[in-house]
Length: 258
Image 1 (cartoon, one colour):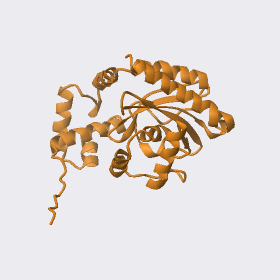
Image 2 (tube, helix red, strand yellow):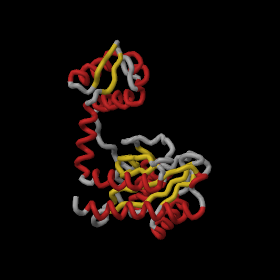
Image 3 (cartoon, rainbow, N blue to C red):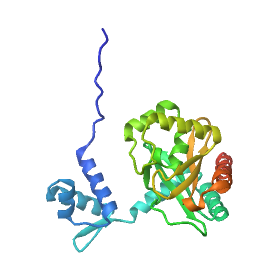
Image 4 (tube, rainbow, N blue to C red):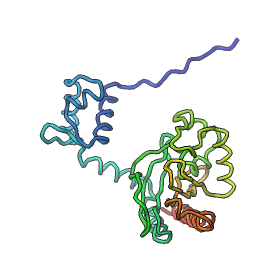
């Protein structure tokens, strides 16, 4: 008779988790005082004050009139991470060209912890504003960038991502069934690009192509987004798919020499 081994969660340090919760809360709210943070996170004011004081002394927070906010030190971390990617300048150069050629919003995202992370975005002359910001994380199943990335993962890895984050529905067009998603990923592999037809935001269409590295490495994906009224016919079905695939190919080639 087989022996059942119960899976256990990794051990974590509660004090560190509290610090991270405070940082993330301040990222969302911009600034807040001790009482507000304590009430929101469910900790005593004394505990929160100790964490805030430690963060401020180490220059991770600044305070004014009794309220705390994130310091500029995080910019240094962000720039360091971007530099270590090795291909950031390649991405920015190519997306600048893509935005200029398409006239629309061009974006690049990579995958981390089962989510899409925006690394760069640039607006062409006709581009719309978007809610995406550099560093923002999105679920993979509901955006073209994410589906392009998932299409290059083995099935086991796709299941791991879905087990981790689920398949939240944002609009009536969001894919929320695994079988449907795997069918879509197969179609993406066959044609070479992914589309998002209002699956995350109503009235917005996106076209995306995966960017591959050496071996089985998936560097990320590149996309063009525009209002649905401008994403029809030959432009949506041929012109923009060809543009994003070309840009993905240029990034792939240049990444090998970076």
